[in-house]
Length: 111
Image 1: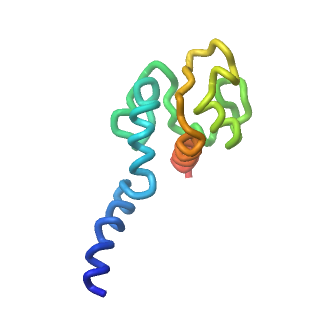
Image 2: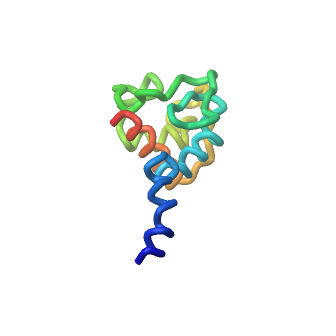
Image 3: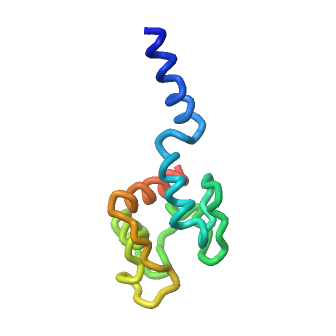
């Protein structure tokens, strides 16, 4: 039993200190979003091309045009050119799972 607790301790500590549930998605956000956006809690997400994503979950509108719903957020994250052709945000090439995880993180920031 003691060995099991010792093996589980690093995982529990990582979850408490931000490495658990959202650790991988933070890396994804830094790689795919951070060059253009500031994202609270994500090292390297300090871009100034697009808006800061702080408080995005509390906004009524996404990208100045779309109701802030989970479906619109996921679609915007992955295929913004399909939603608003010619806008400044490029299609990201994210998988549906990756877009879902990023949306989870962005909405969880505001809780």
